[in-house]
Image 1: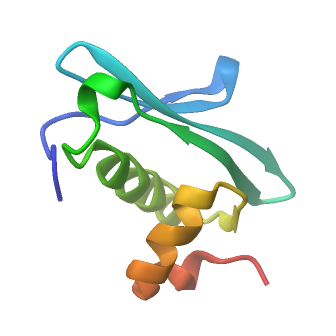
Image 2: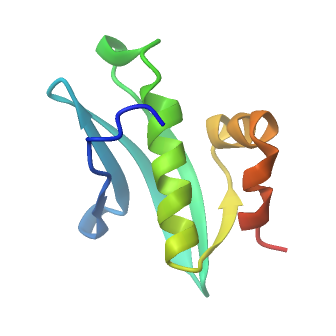
Length: 95
């Protein structure tokens, strides 16, 4: 995992998972309803593009989802692409 020493922050007030790398904030917008978590949008600042930050925040978010026994509904196109590249995470998908 990239950025193992950087903690994923669940900012519940604004429904974001956040990862701060080199002073820049990346985030995933989400909504939770009925034990399902909808990942809506992933955003990484231009300063961090190509450094694996999007992959890191998605992987950390998936670990959070698994630890909290939620089911995933991937609405974000980046999350959908990540799932195609890493099908082992399909175990989190809501049926």
